[in-house]
Length: 245
Image (cartoon, rainbow, N blue to C red):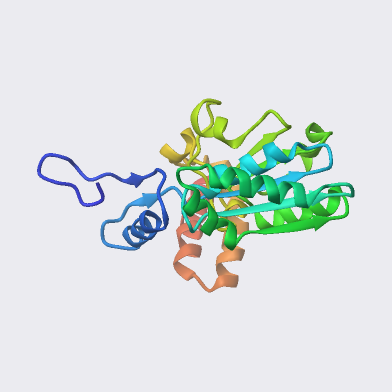
């Protein structure tokens, strides 16, 4: 796609999901003579689950494992908010469900380098999540709807106990090509905008050039760009000469 063939012309953009190898290939192509654009660095899957004492441990474990089973390089993070959360029960449920998964060995390896964060309150939980900038963010707390406005960095967000990430993959209509590795601080997921580019157009009247020109001349002088300056001053001189005749 990047270079084209005799029967298929080269593309200008390559967008879509992939593992760490696909991401590496796309980034190499982006900096090569192929001159293509990519959507974003998107590699191994991630999920961050924020849960409180009202969240069902069965759901928490299932959500964590739904991303862990992608591969041993996936990362799942659990953020527990407030007091009264039974971490032992969640860990027992993780072990139980993992044993029954066909891809349980992959999930187990992913869990081995994942972690749990204890947050005293909503502010701490959101602060950590925004810093981590997860690919998928599940907020499984009692007042989940009230958390939405505080989310600054995430690829895709799932609100409430009835919103598993799997729905986003297959049925809710959102694109699941999403930024990982903290790139959600800089990128959003693939959307229609990803397939578009924008061109700016400007057209000045004489009056417009007379208004903006002197400011441009000054900035060009400060930067030491004489040709930039002359492209304006020569026109301004013509305008002044014609107006004085």
